[in-house]
Length: 398
Image 1 (cartoon, rainbow, N blue to C red):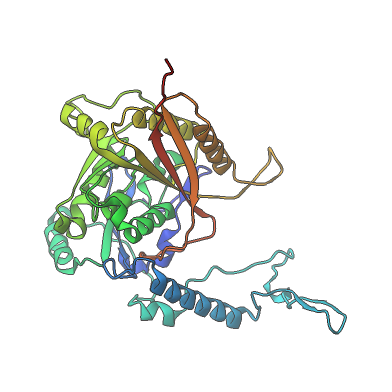
Image 2 (image 1 turned 60 degrees about the vertical axis):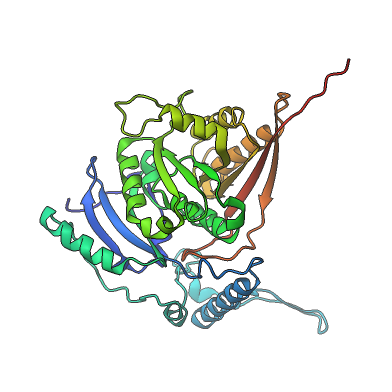
């Protein structure tokens, strides 16, 4: 493969921008010929050292953000407060000089920058961005690689196999910011999920399920496609040092939103047993999905699947959804919109308005005031939603 060709349907996650390139290693080609990378994502906060209200960590985050803002101001000469009003002197509004930030066409051209070197250094990050040529390990080198990995394994980082750029239909093979956001919430509110059974839909590389297993008793990590599920299971096995000491277990299973029933075909390596299906319906307390709302048809299928599952659960449950609003200019509307996000919100509204006499759905946004445990860019377009599912108890009058 001499070069990577990006087509119109190629999508690329940018969570790796905050991960030094020395932490990316191309380890193999998957079954469809895509390069598979191994990346290490570091915890920037102590998982077990978080205060219940997270106040100390919030102060630390605000301090870091202030330093980033100061550095940006020094580098560009522009303050974040772009308009100054001098009402006392009756002067007109004063704007910063931005001519030097404009390109030849007069468009604003700002380079995307990671946090300053001294901030990353304080977190123990290697900030060098030297040119690195990915290396595919040969069969004979795998044992050496595994030995090195065992020596370097620690509880302060997660190792994830993933791809870098795929078609939209293979987007689950990449790592997305929504998985980090949901993982942050789980770690900060670990008491909510203690000893529970959790179902993740569209788990992709398994990042959120791995974090959830540090507190939950049992996690069903589900998606569709043998190649993706193989990658997911490999990530789960590679991170037993994260969740293993808790005694929790993760089961990788196929869950196709376009099918009405769970896969029980014994020929499928990720099929469900009758015992597992019974456990799913009898014990599941939480359901979650991270950054899977990018296609309207799949979003509709997901909500149908969710409704079917929660309607058969024995106990009340809670669902958590992370979503990122991705703004795009569309010719159909001749405007900047986020149609996938808008459709997600419509589905949430429809869910809350269901009146079937059996189940009540309560939808509410979750404030992102909890601390950030993993190193990624928590952009303002990220959102977290909570859906409480309760049975409706009707009383018949005589």
